[in-house]
Image (cartoon, rainbow, N blue to C red; front, side, top):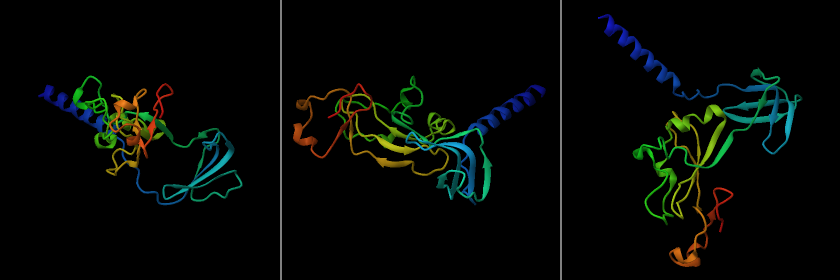
Length: 208
């Protein structure tokens, strides 16, 4: 009996840790929130010392110096830094969970020329890898298929696990090109590429 009781306690503790590790979406913002005293990094290389940042209904409404009037709940962030959300470009986040498990690997499809592939179809918004992005300040990603010569089109998504909302912000109408693509290998030749773009995903990859 004691053994069963101890086993029950261990299982309960493990279950509790698992639930606690999952991200819970915040409730809708009820009133204005102001962050004061922080160094605000605007995102264009400029900073504002002793900044005042206000957001209402989940949207930034003011970013300026201390002359901006605070409203609502005030958070004193003196000595801290505030950054805009980071963007992860050309990543396979949400397309692969465990490298060694083929069933969880959707970053690469069969074939060498597969421009019809769209990464959003296989994207797993509830991936544990994706879930680890938001606490580290990465809020948006370009989910890019890998492999082949023309791997398909990427998608811009917002990392928002647990909300049940569609994370797609923009479906890229461009092909991910791995290396240089000889035109004779593209069905229809040069004319078939009119109105499209081949994009590079790393500095070493070719752009047409």
